Length: 95
Image (cartoon, rainbow, N blue to C red):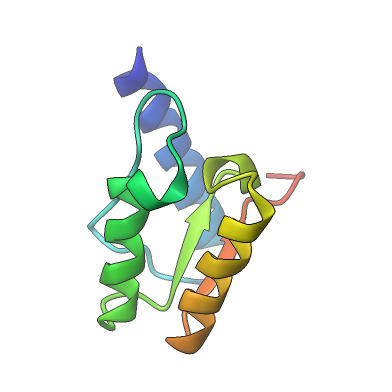
């Protein structure tokens, strides 16, 4: 069930965020189902826009596959975020 899996992922992320001493936002974004090409992923695009508009300082994801495994698309996403001083991080393996 995507709903239960999403809630579990969000709980892991919130636990990680709070352990770092960061404050989580009330807004969350996600792409459900099979990973689409990053340009067609509305959840990731919304998260990038949200952070780029100053509502968050960064994006936390479960792991790189949650973003994209396409190296060129990944580089473009990092460039977009870097230009806007937004960080991207993943849960540590110890989380």
